[in-house]
Length: 270
Image (spheres, rainbow, N blue to C red):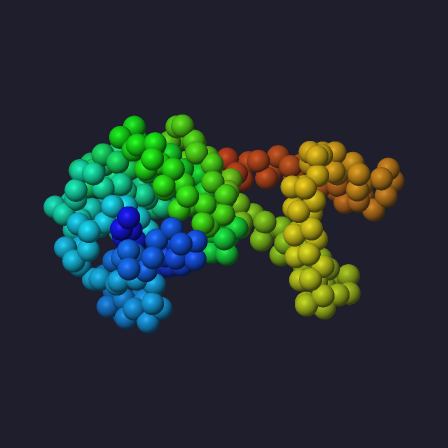
């Protein structure tokens, strides 16, 4: 199976390295299309496959094409690719907000899979939601899921609308976590810890808590109750956050992200 990754940025490089590391494909079967001569030169030194600068040099060779460019670059990309498309090729898009219908019409392609990864994919700990058109066969879908699994966990969703929802939760989610961690680190420094101590305290607490959740049988509310004894320190913090309705503020923020994802998708359709 020949795989072409279009776009040699962070996510394109992440997928290229993950594919090779997992042995889904050998470097002889991996192609990278990068229009920037400077980036292409850098990619060529990484020994991760054949780097090309023009679609006609590599597109027709590919069985699977990964679209890993910025959403705003998609119209010009589609124009440059459309005349070289084979109807049997499968297209996997990780472009945020670009609808399947837009991809199909722009490329005149039938087999399209749309995925929403997140930042931890760069270290093999990502979360990716994906969906596909009916023209994608079961075997092709499993093949792509195996590829996506090289960067972490995946979930298949039946309706494309759920991709926008995943964008708001798991796609944007790392920023929410970093936001909370930043506040906790600043609080740690305000009560006497230095920066490195604060970073260790907070990062290990987050890591340990997530591992505990995954390995245990309790839901979040049950774990909270195990930590927050009546009249104790944890309850004092939770009561403060309850007074400012932090929980609903978090939900409101996630819904704002969802609305923005929908808005961006609609703009791509215009």
